[in-house]
Image (tube, rainbow, N blue to C red):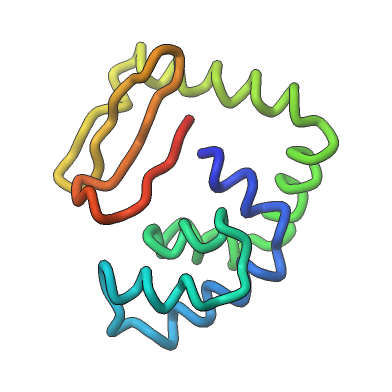
Length: 125
């Protein structure tokens, strides 16, 4: 979640990354990571290439992405408090569970969502 918020502050890079990813569908795993590292994008945008559907949604809904980025920059404390509350509610409702694709764990107060394959990058909520 934090990566999505941070990436939303770079909507032009989100668009570029999504379009680049669409042109490089043959790249997966470590090879994808190596090629993405060569790009001049913010690390938050790079991390979303491991989640192409998220990146595609952010690109398709660019107005929303830009608004989210603006809110994150200008109202960061409010966004963080709301994000933490949403993650807690999702956890209590049983909606944050590990799957074959992702592993959900808790480190102190932080909920960590990471790919089941440890060679891929993860997200923190």
